[in-house]
Amino acid sequence: MNAQAEQVTSVADIVKLVLCPFFIIAGVIAFYHFSDFLLLYRVIGLVAVISVAVGICFTTAKGRAVWQFMLESKQEVRRVVWPTRDEAVRTTLLVFTMVFIVGLILWLLDMFLFWAIQLLMNQGIQ
Image 1 (cartoon, rainbow, N blue to C red):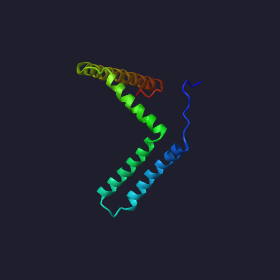
Image 2 (cartoon, rainbow, N blue to C red):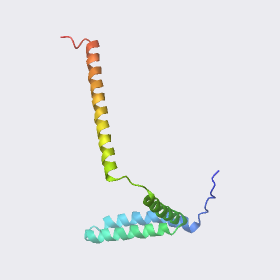
Image 3 (tube, rainbow, N blue to C red):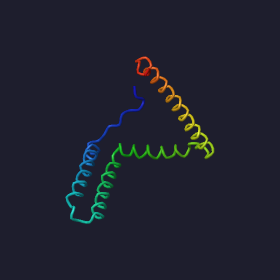
Image 4 (cartoon, helix red, strand yellow):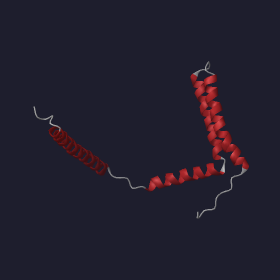
């Protein structure tokens, strides 16, 4: 069973989450409907509508949970021990070398199998 109790979503949160995509769709429709206006004004309007929709989504319980998750993820990224430049270069060169070697081995295997099939089908004898 799930250790955490499921959160009860209120009707207001459901309404907000349902309305957000409609705001975005209305913004996109308005963007194309008002094509006689300058592109700059239409883009500013579309960004404003999307910002309002995202803001409304973040006022719900699920939106606050997503925001909390993003903040915790940011803290986790700070804790990561990143490799030094020297380690990254060595690892990258090792990967490129191994890919080249495996590619060469597969190419030689393909050439050998092609030669063997030609020999078996009597196409190699002229």
